[in-house]
Image (cartoon, rainbow, N blue to C red):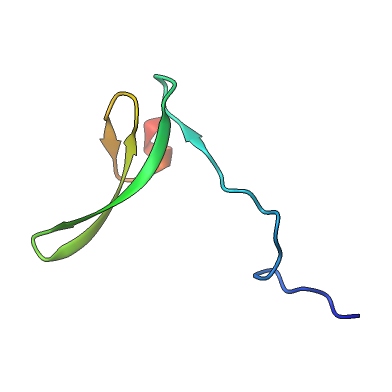
Length: 56
């Protein structure tokens, strides 16, 4: 019986980030000036940062 690789395992849930206002932080991809930009944005207060950990 073979063991499943770490990439094939299921059940690893997605990590949720929360803003100080209580809203959930979602990652968004923007295309500006010919470049792809990833930003984290709070759904409730519309605050945006470079990554989710910057909200703390």
